[in-house]
Image (cartoon, rainbow, N blue to C red; front, side, top):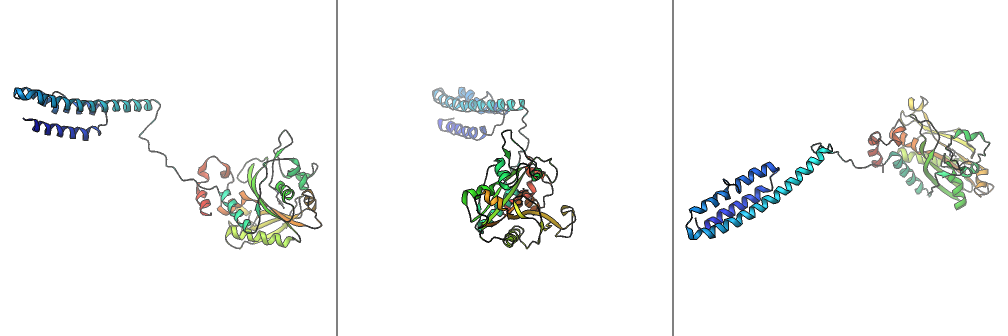
Length: 353
Ligand code: DAH
């Protein structure tokens, strides 16, 4: 064997080592691999022991070549050993804490828009086109804005209609979005067109149709000569846009201290199309929106002269509207931390945008 032949054999072994070493998966495999290459009976090992048979004058040179090749291969093997040791140690630690790396991962679902948010955005877009601004008010409200300024004095029995979460300092969690009516009157003065989507709270026992936390969207339009006709026109337009078809409505007298006259606005039940079903209690109609002409006392509280200005207001139940629009029959899925209840509607929600 001459130097060139040996060099070629060594190069082959090097190439083989490079290719195979990275694929070793355990210390046991590495051990076997090492025996095949550098062990006594391994390829380099055998070459080294055959050095004795080479002519004396070539021995030193060939031996040097082989030894440096062996060192190089050995350090590659040592490095791999360290890596495999670390990996096995890591796996042992994870096994100790009960981690099963063979379990399939959880599928990450893309997020979606909550049905109430989807309906809210839709309602906002409709009213923005009509020149309404979008206002907001505090969820922690004073007695004045939540009740007094809305013509509901402390002695008024209407306070009982809205079971209230009171704070110990006289403040409360707003029971409706109506307080922002007077706040907006004070802020902007007449003429005024605004809506107020927002979260409201009532001291309710939760069941399929009652929640202690829900969303409303207040609406307010004040100008000279505003009448019930304007109210009906705007309500019809809103429902047509939301349900993408003409919706039949009816007005019944309704009592709210802050409007006079006050109405309950019903729409043809979207679930049964008016023929009668459990959702509409077989009447064919569902209450969707209390509304009315702003009471002169409320205008006065907002600093507006009722002799010159009139207005209408409505309190759209956003949560209720979302349930109607998406056919959600149990209100509890809306606020539940268990997102599985909302998943069927999330896609609809984002689709509607
Ligand atoms: N704030 C009332 C409630 O939550 C709903 C309401 C009724 C709002 C009549 C209005 C309205 O603006 O005109 O029960």
